[in-house]
Length: 125
Image 1 (cartoon, rainbow, N blue to C red):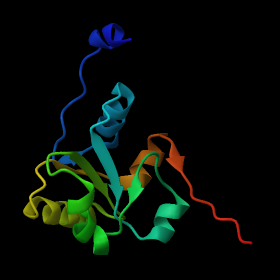
Image 2: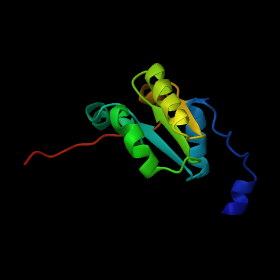
Image 3: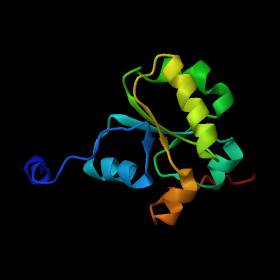
């Protein structure tokens, strides 16, 4: 299988601002060394999020990021707005994370492109 993918062009490397197509290309290529972080609140995350994203609300992200990620890991951040995501990304960079990108348009752009989303449903007992 590795030989087959050798004929395909390698996805673009992480950029400070990435389009949903750039992220999807990396996921389809099979690059596991990245993490997608949804920094919206849990209610928004549960309603719909990029497939494979983890929920780390912005107010607690910095306190847990150092324990969860290597500073050289590729991190893709999205929120309700690009400005919110950019502010969180800048905080991560200031904390020493060297490979941080925002996903422009967040989950809305992801959905508009027709890419898969996940929904968290909780059954009430």
